[in-house]
View 1 (spheres, each protein chain N blue to C red):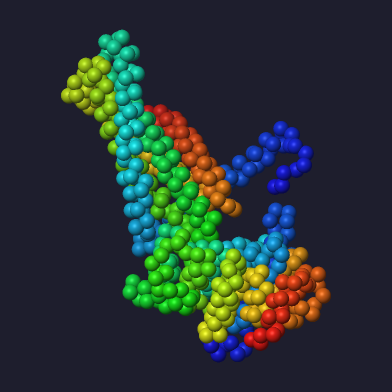
View 2 (spheres, each protein chain N blue to C red):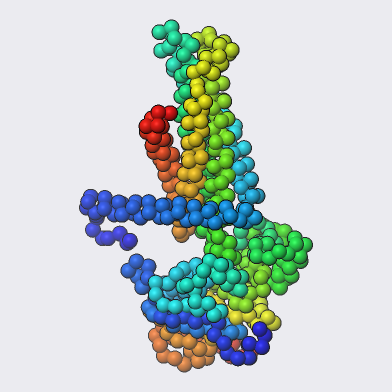
Length: 271
Length: 265
């Protein structure tokens, strides 16, 4: 892959980038397959599960992220209610702010903002950690000690995030609605009891679960892309930075694509 | 297994190994044998594929063609369980140590034991201490993190971990690179001691002429995708091959040769 002396034509450039992109997509797909097969193999042997690693990752990706996830979703709830307040007031439909905040937060915003924060926070950390281990020959050392890197490094992270992200999403739901509730009172004069009365009527359990169901998928995307990019690190320290950036960009991209697909699927299912 | 050292027995056998990276051919039908109980050194210019060859022997890279047999196992058609069993029988010391940065030195040494044995923590601790001492490190080093170690200590700690499971076969990647002459001299001695006391078969990659002259029983010179010559340094010095001669020409080579011949082993 040495650059040739003459500059590439536009067409050549597009061709090369497409080939590289295809190669990477293919590698990602086979990595997903490998992870799934390691997971399937370990399901039958719970004694080999790395519980310590899973718990450690739940703490670092879940518990430690509570403040930032809480703050941002609270602010998001405030913004949604504030922006909606003007419009609703014009029609005298003040009480519908509960519908607006409830449905948009639970269904879309909370799962998405949580996934994006975690992609930036944990996806990058996974890529950097594994990438550094690849550069310092630690991954090779693991293999030669007969420890599969997928089993020790990737699987616990995926499992931890699949557990932690839904929980974080519920937390974001609560804080987001709380933010909306505060705004409803100060901007539209709707009391907390009034807001919650309407909220319970307007937001169905389905809405809550539709939002929550996305979280494990987002979690798997973030963890797998982060680990995948980390394991693809070759060469020196600069490569770790590059792979980390890639991990974040790709996982946020894929999370949003997955969210769009969910929307299509849910509307087809009339949920 | 100690009586096996008397009879020459092939521990590693490479037949027609071919490796390509894209269009670049690194190994072109390479053949090589390593006997039990010997210290075998692989040398060659940069890009001659020494490291790749080592990675192929320890199941980190798969050659494009050819066959590699290690300890009687053909690496190509090894099941996952067989590979796991085989990996317990060799130890690898990486060039940069490859120690796990999140664990202390002692935890690093104990890790293979924790993974592959049912020993209690106290037993693992005792073994780790013994290996630490064997590799020539002070007991206090065990509690340190890898990032606190000097280059020489890092290599010794890595060696201690490689020895944790009492392997039959030891792979050393550049054991003296980046060390000061005194530390490097210590490594020379250590490598010889391991072979003499434990009957280990040792395969190493090195550029260190002193190590080659003082320690290696046989040396294989890689060049142009093949093994250009195999033999003791004295035998190699009589060969006229263009890939081999640079190791014996020049003031540094003559210096190492002089000190080796004047100081009998």
